Length: 110
Figure 1 (cartoon, helix red, strand yellow):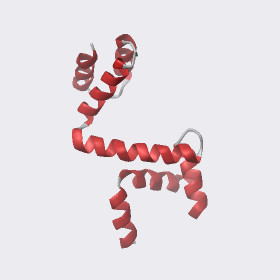
Figure 2 (cartoon, one colour):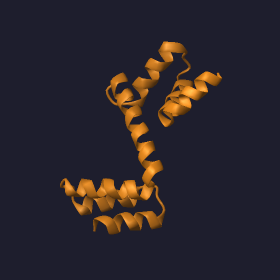
Figure 3 (tube, helix red, strand yellow):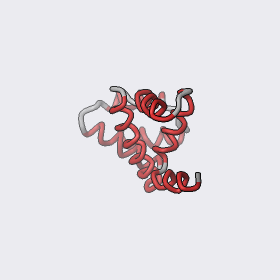
């Protein structure tokens, strides 16, 4: 187990997501991995693999820059690509975030 833990720690959050998903399948071995990947992403196993990659990158960005900076950058990019401020503001209002963080997001795109 120690060897697995060392390797898993090197990969980080994607391994944790995969392990939690695997534990919910009730399956073992390759069947658990296959089912977990299929459950994680749209498009079956390939989508699950892509999602784990995105989770890994997102975890790195959150660690490096923090949630506020990452969310502001995402919403500013979406606005730059043509999504209306009205639509984005409505979306922000529905997010499960603190009032302070919602205000900062609104200020960044308004």
